[in-house]
Length: 319
Ligand code: F6P
Image (cartoon, rainbow, N blue to C red; front, side):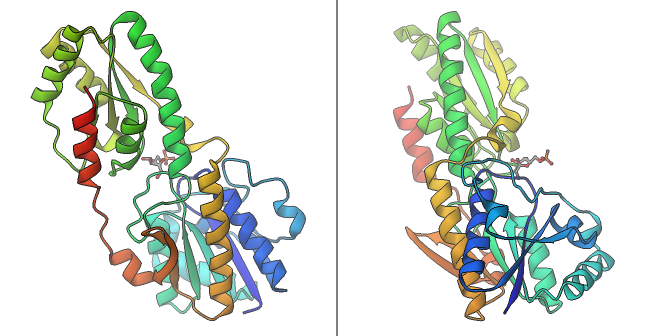
């Protein structure tokens, strides 16, 4: 394995740059040639491929976004798209491809591996919904961004004696909502994975108000329903004025936390070293407190359960 390439795919996540940096520097350390593919799988098909060197990744460890840009390519999901992608890799004589992305990007990589390409996957998504790893690159930063916003919303909610339903990202997963709800001291979290008991949420809101509490924050995952409707229902059932705030794309940007930088740096280096050992078609991961790696097909087939104990504790200590 002498010549490898790296791309970022799907929604960008803070820490993707740190992962690219680690991939590039590790490859150079081992005298390999490293190519950057711009715009994910779409850019691979379009041959947006450039050789990278030490300076290509200088001063990027602290930057959000991805210097390689990202995309979600419909064409790549077709057979013709994948064949084009493979042609491009052959033209550039790429021995192995490193994909940094979420679940969808992993599936794309698996399809390529089944067509003979040597691939390696690194989990990069704010959603934390990649089953093979406990933490994905970008999740910790997104949670911190959400917590910061929740604190600010709590200030203004307290000043006006209001409730606020704060919608966070996560697609169909409630990890950002659960973690940000706990860390932000929210009064409730509403998740796609667990049916919310709205009657007790309303009761809790009223009890808190009667105790003299000045605000009530509910963190709602985007996959758990319309946050404005949830806010309206809260008002209708409690009489407490309740606003709604969608945190949206601010959760995807910003300088990565030190946790995400470390995750990205180790995973990037691991991915290259595994390729060197000819251990390809694998997904690097952080599981049970350790860095590790899994066969890509097995990684994709894994199921991730939201930690119901965290949900229980969240509900117990929020009042
Ligand atoms: O997967 C990351 C994510 O930010 C999800 O949380 C969200 O549902 C989605 O991407 C938004 O995608 P887009 O950037 O295409 O609007």
